[in-house]
Image (cartoon, rainbow, N blue to C red; front, side, top):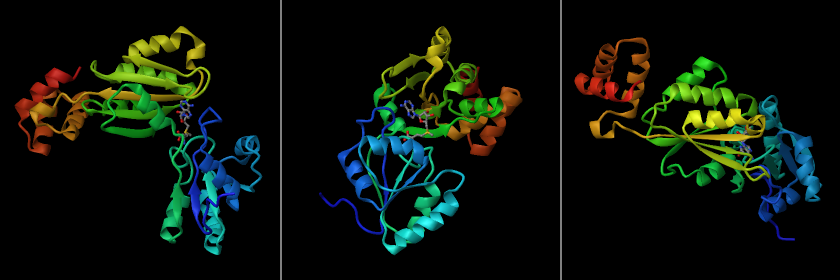
Length: 283
Ligand code: SAM
């Protein structure tokens, strides 16, 4: 068999997000060959490993034991063992454990090699039809209503696509918050159950997708990637995205004139121009 691993190296190995066939032959080779697999949930990963008849020993590494486990595993790597890191699905570290471990490895000069592979973020984005030249990824939105609304308000005039992960129990609330907090010019694509039997992409305004979620309880089940594009209406006026974010926030608490004056003073902009932008773009 082809040798795919080097002693003393950590391999970041993406695993399927729904369709078991979405694992590369290189990933299978590495999982087969390493001395140890650090898995977010060893029982979960054992299903994938046994499907591919891989009998490599596994050890858990999750949010609650990562720091301690990292110490233990970096010692093993320094002794010359090779280790693969996997999460329950997709690319480790992307809203998944692994950051502490990889950072520790880097600090100790341990080689880290990441294999390309499944990731809900990039898969959903590439099929969304929303602009991809510039995007931001925010992981999961805050659970609390006020913090969620605040995070969504900040998307106004972002001029890029913003990607969030969302859980089925929160998708309806999140879409209602989008409907309440986003300006009328937003575009949403909701990707559901990527690479699974009932894979669906829904596009439209928040209110349309909310109506779709409400139309059938089944629509709220599964795993979701929420993508929101908000055009930047300010570019031509020379005001920055940060300035508009501040204006938007202040205008929620103060009269628009006052909000525009404070924002203008802070960013060295013209207050009348900001006031006009506010009248134009804020509800
Ligand atoms: N590390 C993973 C990755 O690379 O995509 C993400 C892990 S995060 C804990 C899990 C979230 O990813 C889910 O709540 C969902 O938002 C998204 N996700 C994972 N698999 C998905 C799928 N098949 N379809 C849609 N979203 C998915």
